[in-house]
Image 1 (spheres, rainbow, N blue to C red):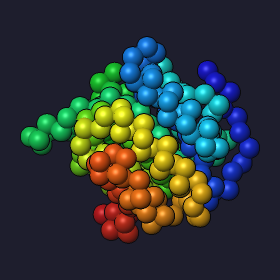
Image 2: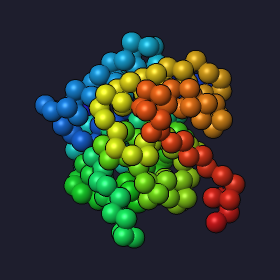
Image 3: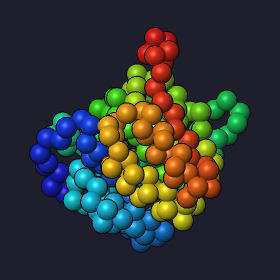
Length: 205
């Protein structure tokens, strides 16, 4: 496992924790993860780990995101997600321990309250995604994800450009700043990216 220790980082300074939940080591997911990660490093974006993290189990994933010493302000997750069934059932996502759903993944991500969560998921996000990360007890500050199937080319173009602009913006943890950076770079993903912001109503529900 990588050495994840890092010095404390001011809350307004972007620091990305990069986690690949696909655990792929040979296919297109591996190539995509490394391409995005290498672009982030080349842009000088602060990373919570010097390497891509591929947890071997749900328990290991939960332990990583709970580590207070990482001081990350944004969590980037590359994952396999299923299509929205459209029949009232919860859409599926693959966690390190196997097929699960967004609510289970969000529960494992409990340390990310009030943070930015970015999702690169093959079939995109759905309402379950936002309900799980924002409207559940997690209360992530902002979730950035695609609203439809996202190609590797689109993900590889959008996320490095988005994070580079956000890292040069102040304050980088401000929801309106994040949304502006999404809007400014959405053309790289053919306008598929959505920025969902935690509202006061979500906290009161």
